[in-house]
Amino acid sequence: MKPQVAFFDFACCEGCQLQIANLEEDIVGLVNVVDVVEFREVLTGTAEKYDVSFIEGSITRPEDEERLKDIRKRSKLLVAYGSCATSGGVNKLKNLNPSLENVQKTVYGKDWNMPHLRTAATKAVDEVVKVDAYIPGCPVNRKEVVEVVKSLVLGHVPALPEYPVCVECKFRENVCLFQKGQVCLGLVTRAGCNAICPSNNSPCEGCRGVMPNPNKNAMHEVLKENNLTVKQIFDMFTMFSADPEVKG
Ligand code: SF4
Ligand code: SF4
Ligand code: SF4
Image (cartoon, rainbow, N blue to C red; front, side):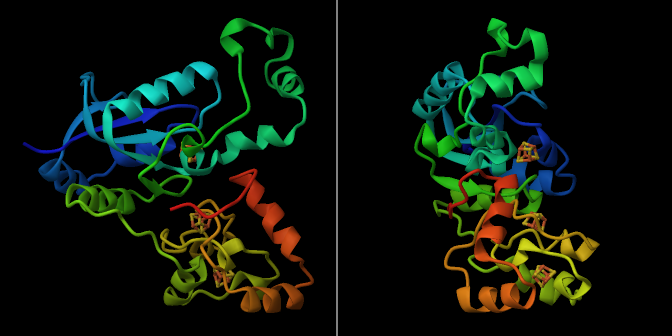
């Protein structure tokens, strides 16, 4: 019997599950090794137990915490996929505002206090339940998702790249955006997206999070050359996480 895999979403834009729904030729490789038993955007079925559950989105309401804990209980392995799930993502920006009430009033105006618009401080998935594997990115790289599924099915914890986006950028023979007067976070961001943004002339904004053990000397050199501080660089990471840290 093939492992049973399910996909769930919480507070998010659903862009990550769209990446999976659009796997195209890779979908054949995926359905050859697993049974997808629950996936709201694609299927109507449900199941009681799961070998691997994929969680998209951040946790922003008490009832979502309960739902997530229930999924965890029924799952052998749980994977947080996409920046919203791995770090809180753009949803976590609201935690930087000291008043949740202000946030609600800004977003919902006069209706801010209606019961169905209730909200709480945003949490990443691992702030609520144990996470067995992470797939960073906003959105996730669909090929990476397939590789992670295959690794889990074979009983391995998938290894994420432990080098910066700059490595992939150099392999693609791009001219560094710093040389064009732009500020790029590829220096300290975990690789795995094939440097898609700088390859399209757009600076890396750090959606895959900070890489483990960044080369501080090289970073300081680039920052110095460009009149930037470490704080400025790490502040830029708040786009995808209010408290950037290494995950996975
Ligand atoms: S990580 Fe990005 S693409 Fe994925 S659900 Fe969150 S906002 Fe959407
Ligand atoms: S453009 Fe960005 S990712 Fe590419 S080499 Fe420069 S700093 Fe690194
Ligand atoms: S280049 Fe940076 S911002 Fe763009 S997808 Fe990769 S990690 Fe995310």
